[in-house]
Image (tube, rainbow, N blue to C red; front, side):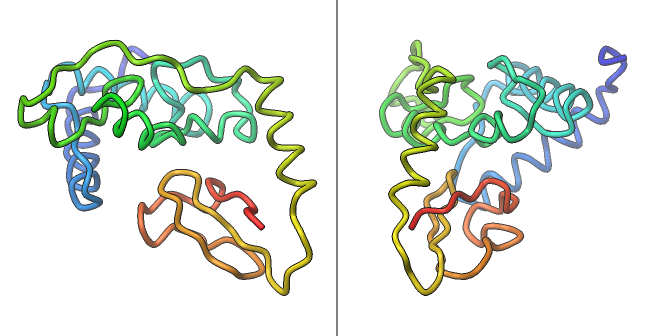
Length: 167
């Protein structure tokens, strides 16, 4: 079922992802063959789970549990800053793109499930009483104060389910 993804579908998704990524100031791995394998994994996960879980991590199949690993994951920017690439090497920094630094192994930043649950509980408990809740995009850090998060992040274009109540 997942092996029948056409090269045409992969190529179209790759081109769209590349345009969207570059429009947001990011870069895809310049190894197109490698990157298209990751794109295929995103398509497989979209078909399998209904969302584009990172192709290099084990998804639970429950969107609420996997929000932090929906591509682009919450760990992309810290990984780009520290290592020049994200965990699966789909995204790379300008320095990697220009050949100034080489890719190397990336440690997993995603905390174990118990730690993620603990962090989520602590955030909920720390929210004070404000006129409006403050929502934070977990991908790019965009903040907004309103009753509900925006449908789409105006900065990185992810959907509202990637927002968390910040304050």
